[in-house]
Length: 327
Image (cartoon, rainbow, N blue to C red; front, side):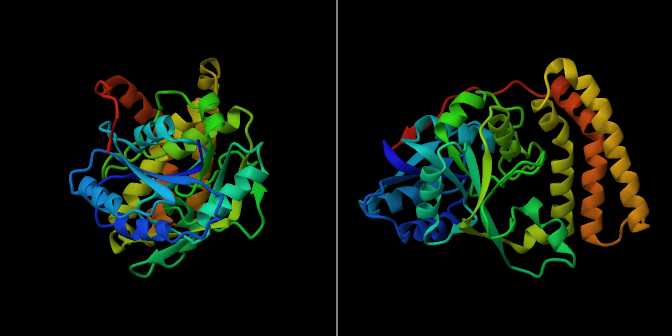
């Protein structure tokens, strides 16, 4: 067993991974801490495998760099693959476009050791933007994994508020006890955001299992956001995807016999929020992108049960090919 595992799930990450691996190579760590880095290649079409192989040849001996290939497309499958093969009790997840501070691993391990009752905990995440975000961007920034929630660690207690998937650390025992083998949402598939929300699903299972979930601001990350992710078309698609995932995520929280009541209760509340937003903004068709994103989220949250029914009826059979580890 190692003390800590860093997992990076990636798709076509050959140009992003070298910068992240350089950050991990330079981590400041206690000499006694043993750790590993696990790259989960989620069916990439570029030279990701060769990129990792090149880094393995010159990787320092104080940690191991492992490569896993997961052919089932979807971030949820990539994370399940990682949890099957990780060698530590504490598993930290980084996206290939997030850059950890030089003490991120040390802070993540220290917090996990000091709070053994906590099932998962998240990082503080700053944004590094290739272009200027739109005015009012702070209202929607958390949906792009920009997380600034103060300088003091605290438990997430309010329903619906959870850490971002990037920078979260999960206790292996909590995962094994609470997270099912098959996800309700596959997560980001390649460049598709259609089934986004797998991180919220996973953390919801852990919370329902009685494990507290915390925010640890001492774990600092920088999320590199390219100009393409600040374009209106991308932002609107992102918020549509978040909205339509709401029904599946809500079903996770309720027993099947309670779901019809849940559908009615949340439907009324979603409609109320939508009407309040229209009245508050005094715009039936918002003209600024931030307000349009908020409206898109509310509309598609209201419509998410229809989307959920469509997926259940017409989703193609699941590919059950197992992962394989490569040297």
